[in-house]
Image 1 (cartoon, one colour):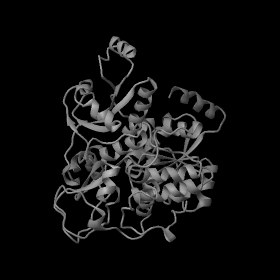
Image 2 (tube, helix red, strand yellow):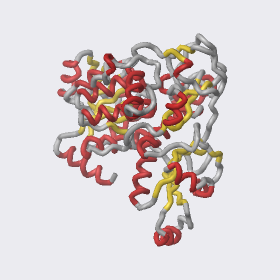
Image 3 (cartoon, one colour):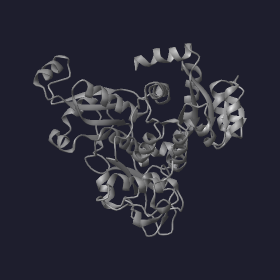
Image 4 (cartoon, one colour):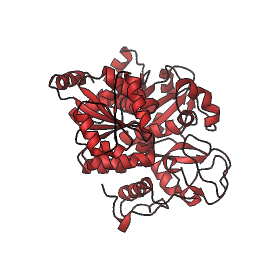
Amino acid sequence: MIILDRALRAREAAGQPIRVGLVGAGFMGRGLANQLQHAAVGIRLVAISNRNVERAVDAYLYADAALSPVIASSQADVDQGIRSGRPVAVADAMLLCRSPLVDVLVDVTGAVEFGAHVALEAFRHGKHLILMNAELDATIGPILQVYARRHDVVLSACDGDQPGVEINLHRFVSGLGLIPRVMGNIKGLQDPYRTPATQQAFAERWGQKPSMVTSFADGSKVSFEQAVVANATGMTVARRGMLALDHRGHVDELTAKYDLAQLRALGGIVEYVVGAQPGPGVFCLAEHTDPKQRHYLNLYKLGEGPLYSFYTPYHLCHFEVPNTIARVALFGDAAGQPRGGPFVEVCAVAKRDLRQGETLDDYGHYMTYGEAVSSGEMRRGRYLPQGLVEGCLLRRDIAKDAVLTFDDVTCPAGRLADRLYEEQVRHFAGPAGPAAAPGAAAPEGGAAVTA
């Protein structure tokens, strides 16, 4: 990352900063706006979109009370505001996607259906897209990557959030000549039955949405995040839901907790542990096949092996996103992107007994939690993705802790995310692969979604 600071200073000196638009002005959007306003050299935050445009204005004022954002309602308003150097607030994110004066978009929404529309429109107009939206990435990231490459733009996860930190660690450890076998996320709490009601006090304390905090607690968020890591590294899961060890000791002690033969057979796994220190960070357990190098690793206090522990003891979320902006815009380097079809996905599991005729709420609410699962099991079981649960109508009763399938629900009509998911299944299965899983309608004429 050290090379980025000089490259950004050069852009600043040349008067050619990278022009960034934010999509979303929630908790993370506000923090990122503040970071870009005060600590980013060679980058300019030129516009923020939010469906409630006043929240976009508030995000600017949170960063700097002296700012005077212009509220734009048309493409001409957006472009003129950016040209004039005024910060732009807008309700319609598509206007940022279409503006020739925006170089990079950052999706900070966590919304799958809305994020799908933003992604395709951004790609159509030559915009790089950075996702602080693991839910979108884990659900349809592989097919979005196909569209991004088709339009010669970069789709990227972000530095600072756990998936980006893990993928950076994976790249670092691989570069040393070791073979990563476990990529892990350290959590302080795991309870699949948490709800917005149980998490409201914590959410209010930190100024976050109760539903988002619930997704952290019930395991949905870590499942989305580890799916992103798996799809970027080619790893899988040891079982549905991951092993999820409860380990109250140091992360280095985890080198003795896994079966190396199983890890080798699986090609490496993504994982999370509860309670390990130092948290809340991420870790990599890797092996070295060269006995001469193992001798040196032992000398350097990493132990005798066969597994060696590497970790980052923190994740700084929005603080590091400017690094991703620079990587993407200046070097075409993603902080993480699917390497092909999905290796791991996130299925929906009943949080309580569900009844026929009920309409499912979104992730992080009262009805479902997400579990990471291998893509092969996902296909065979026709599991319903956690990223697509909202608005699905139950066709039958579902018992608590049962995995929901496409056969259990009727998906809302006309959703882009459903069509992209179906295309993802077809695209990566190939003509001899399994049939498409969703019950959603295929794109018109059976063709790919236009982008």
